[in-house]
Length: 200
Figure 1 (cartoon, rainbow, N blue to C red):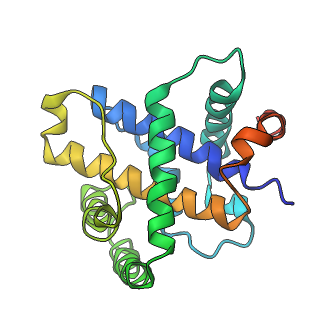
Figure 2 (spheres, one colour; figure 1 turned 90 degrees about the vertical axis):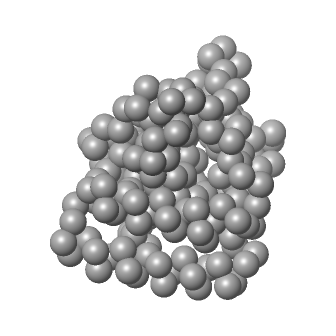
Figure 3 (tube, rainbow, N blue to C red; figure 1 turned 45 degrees about the vertical axis):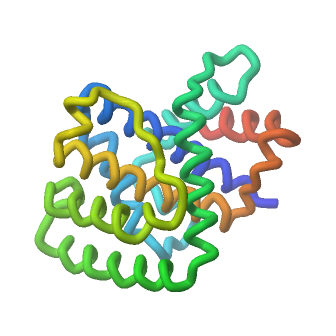
């Protein structure tokens, strides 16, 4: 089986960290988030790893993944909840043809907007957030975001978090397409850690 499924898993871990940074501190660093936002509209890559154009952020995700799975690693329960919630929501999406069609249509609209705006422009971030709110969020249990209440009330912060969660769903889709399964966390943990270490 391909080992490529570890890359989107690492991406989900890193995206979850970025959600935490945005929700708790209002940090939304373009250098950190742009690769994941670009992945949302990179739907036909030649190779799975081409979904993420910045290898550095994936290496950071691999480090986060190793930390969460290693016995000696410092566990982040919040981060694990985010990753699990993304996987659940992706499953609901994959079982809903109407939502998949709507998602494809909405992403085509964003691709047209990208002819005029950068990926981190507030217009694009708001468009991604809108897709998450209208197409994905209604499909399952809402993902609970932990952070500063004052920040979480701000529309711009809400948009950034939702755009990141949409990127997380993109990685969850890729993870499943490449053979990712939940049982690997129980029976294949060492293998995942080994692959992640080789990817750093």
